[in-house]
Amino acid sequence: MVRDRWYDINGVWTGSATLLPNGQIVMLYTGKTNESVQVQNLAYPANLSDPLLLDWLKYPGNPVLVPPPGIGADDFRDPTTAWLGPDGAWRITMGSRFNSTIGISLVYRTTNFMDYELLDGVLHAVPSTGMWECVDFYPISIDGSVGLDTSALGPGTKHVLKASLDDTKVDHYAIGTYDPVTDKWTPDNPKEDVGIGLKVDYGRYYASKTFFDQNKERRILWGWIDETDSDIADLRKGWASLQTIPRTVVYDKKTGTHILQWPVEEVESLRLNSTVFKEVLVEAGSVVPLDIGTATQLDILAEFEIESLAGNATDEVSDCGDGAVDRSTFGPFGVLVIADDSLSELTPVYFRPVNTSDYDGSLKTYFCTDETRSSKASDVFKQVYGGKVPVLEDEKYNMRVLVDHSVVESFGQGGRTVITSRVYPTEAIYGAARLFLFNNATGVNVKATLKIWEMNSAFIRPFPFENTS
Image (tube, rainbow, N blue to C red; front, side, top):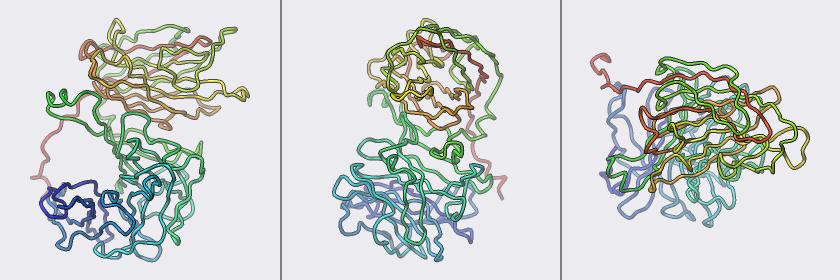
């Protein structure tokens, strides 16, 4: 879609498609008008038989929604996929803010996608979270087995509300209960509400969006990875930013508090030869090389067990610390990806278990990625990312790491905590990239078991239109 009408001449922004029961498809998208007002517009596929839906027709009556009273001209954007209510009418929600600081999600009702009624109140609001954009709202099955259609309701269902916070450029989510009669959503845990609790991804990630794959009964998440190098470098490259590997999303029925994100199964078709390492001992303060050859495109499954060492306690670090160099009793330990032989460049992906203040024999664990030594380039932004990850009593520490040259996507404990990193090494590139295990704890040895696949490139070919007739 291109910006060629007065109602979108200054931008065709985020939109969402809805598949109707009769097979028709409608698209609502945000346009920025010739007066820089954010409005919502309607479009239809020009040819439903086109499997790629390349061409779209804009509704002559656009815009179908304008900012309501009390909402700023630039605070009204990103409509969701619609869901069908028990009254037979459709609902959509979109992000905004009230009094500058209260993040809100407005709800509209429609029967034809051309005429809308703004419902009283809001779907949800959270003070001090600022403008909400790219809102996503979808059901999840509490048995954690399959994804659900966006209109699914009833017993055995909870709802995820996600918002991208414009102030911080971070995607947050919470799990809760949706009342289809009042069109209100309530978080299960108000202390972990949208914008103040869990993050979709703890790294370089924003503006995510899910859709329902009805053929495989799964909900799939896309997210945006922006750049960490300079604008000048982007101009030299000729491109900037990309999407993550698509991820499935299900309810984590073991914790009851998280979603689980996992790379779609199609990624496994890129796996080539694999190497297995069993119970590799990584002593406290050591680094162990893994001989797998070139390490720029990898799919890594790793599992860790810790063995305590008597009398080697260290002052605790409360979170990811200042990176993998920051030692504590039980961590950090994990893998060094995109590293060169001399370890002058490396990106650690690691666990850091720590004693809780009310120590009861259990550990609170953080899952982290340290970019601070990922590149010698001076114009690359480098940071330590991470967050808490529940590790249950019957679980070992486990991670999956997808390495693709400048992108590292890391999944802790089956995808409870996920971190996307954007790294631009200068030495650890192509044939010079290596993989290591490391353990920088002072009080534990670690045993690691891994299965590592070299990954093929995804060869993008022209779509075979001649086979679709």
